[in-house]
Length: 455
Image (cartoon, rainbow, N blue to C red; front, side, top):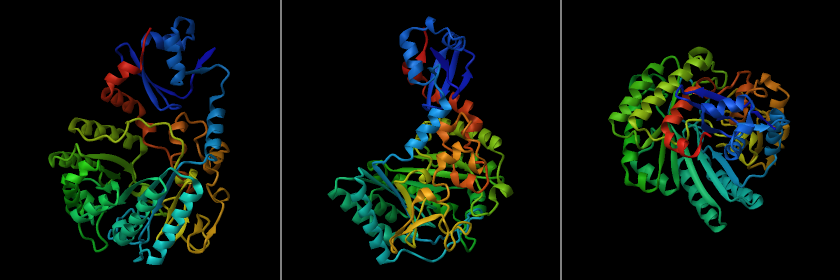
């Protein structure tokens, strides 16, 4: 017989319909109130077989003897040992950045990858591809500010694209940039190197942004960055090559009231249909106490996020993915052995927060698992966070994930935050029901056609 899964969120639409979201599958379905009552009262014999199959398929109901939590934890432990066909590498061509953002935890230095190191990085990636029998190589260019290491990006991109073509590996790339150096000619060159996705940060409107994302000489940056974005999306190659620009807003007490102004401004510029936006609360990075000093309560951030998403829907902003979290198969670089970061010194690490952050970047730090030039590599499983899912199972680092119904779509969110002693829960934990309704509105036709269950 069956039972109702514990990994469900429900919303009563008060029109005779119930929304159910399964965190085990990351799927949203719409039920008639009649079906829902039959499920709750375990009157499965009154539900036709086709509906029962769909309920079981979407993990709304499960076998009566199933221990869900145990199965989920065991699946996670098994997943961490499975070899992936995707090699995901984050490369920092420079340790430098023009900006002096007041919440940044990095200590920048005027250091770019040397020519010899660029060669060593290429050889290392070539070795990894040949050894691992990968089908895809994805590169994320990161910094500091990666465009300050443009020559390294150009050389490595050309060589890696040629290599992947020869060995029949699909190549893709994206860049996380502050956007200050993303001039028209630079953007065209980057697209030529198959860098088609960009994350660029705008922290609210002009006044708020310039108060938090300024140059090291306190220069303003909003106008220059926005001008570069407008010119990029107007470039014919943006649509031709299916490029994507994601605007990230780091939200805190000093700028949250200006996010509406930013959304309005982007719409008025006529680029809302060309870009996506996402919002993230500032967090502590390198013991800078950003969350403590200017952070918002997660519940309040969740409320604000819904308001911004509604406004974006009204203005026709491009959505890069479902508003609801999808089922995850890896937490992040920490839990994916086919993913790592190569910094401008040739060191290997497994979290973006490690290089150039004094909290973790020091002599003999355990957070680095290798060095390309020295050809020294450590077993990541023996380093901090090396067995993250076992840490969740054993409730290490004071995690609350094991008994949380969001575990399948969260997987602990950010291991390094738990390691630092901060509870790390995603915003959807606090606004999931609003997200369900918004997703239903956005995809009502599909849900009614494929995921509406009624006798």
